[in-house]
Image 1 (cartoon, protein in one colour):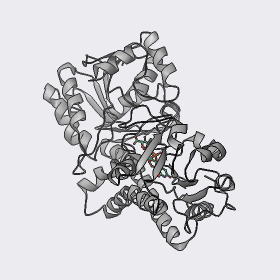
Image 2 (cartoon, protein in one colour):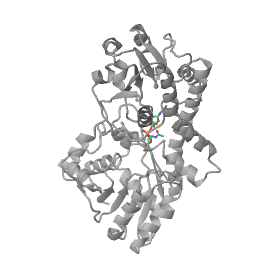
Image 3 (cartoon, protein in one colour):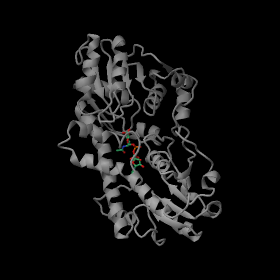
Image 4 (cartoon, protein in one colour):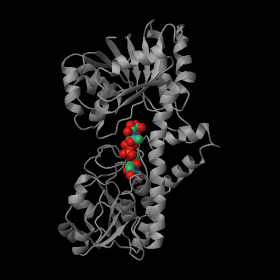
Length: 429
Ligand code: SAJ
């Protein structure tokens, strides 16, 4: 295996292609977007990810990585395309099918096709293999197929690509072993070989576990608010138990993974996955809950203005797609509430982003939605002077509430009853 074709140059495909290229493979990165192809070929970045620029530059500069819009013959094909969910909560596998279709004409005897995209259980065996067999070749005899789901965390992709364990699911043992040959070139974690459907399920249940866990904490946040106590403190103390690992509440679960993958299970097994479906709904209801609390905070203020801080789907990433902030902003607009948005990470945003000063000017409430690292160091003194009312609503419990209160702020925190935090609590995250 010398030549590898990586289909899809997004958050996963581009880092994977670059790492393979810097590890001695001759890599062709394929993307349907000519703009992405142009950017990569010039050593640039179509997506933001710490450290990626250097590795793409190194890969392209050495001549080991180039990008194109068309799939070309190779020894191995790695499919890393998006698998979104439809309005009906079904996996949209059109991109996987299109990628497979582009491989069919160039597929040759002895080739290996690896699917990295997250897919519903059974997809590799029941959808990918039949697609590839349109080539006239037989999977397991003429060519090999494996599912090797990506499991890296946006913001830490390069590190996790190398250090994380990998689960490789083959349609047969030779396929899994062949795929291992490629990943073992750069993976420092352990590599586990299983069947393709097991690998699909491992990936789905990892994200589902997080989603259900977060739903539990969000439910706890609502209960604690009613009780007049602090959910963050409850979680912190409960997590000292050696077998408890509660996640954190928040304004909702975003991104293309946790908010999507559980549906791949629910859609196929609705009767068996009621807890998974309920958790999804619980998390989807959080932006509505934030809006309800915010409306209470703004009650009685004539023509209020809200400062929205952080619109990416989570801290320290530039990705605002599927972010709970978008839902909150939509609700603000529907209610005719004036707002201004600040986020120094996000560039691609379907609305106006303004400077920090502009966002705080004449504002009645600062609403923290994404807990970017720098927000923890915001000093309330000067910002407070810009505002009409010194109020902050922290949905991530990330500010130094004692400090903000000391500067005359009324502090509201999601999951904390009684309207204000008791400044005496120190929350360890
Ligand atoms: N969130 C909370 N509370 C928490 C943790 C997260 O509300 O305690 C929210 C975040 O703010 C965000 C969402 O959940 O809106 C998802 O964030 P995340 O950091 O849990 O996950 P992703 O979507 O960035 O990446 C996940 C990872 N999966 C796991 O950790 C099991 C990553 O390893 C996967 O590769 C990725 O999904 C994927 O591509 O599937």
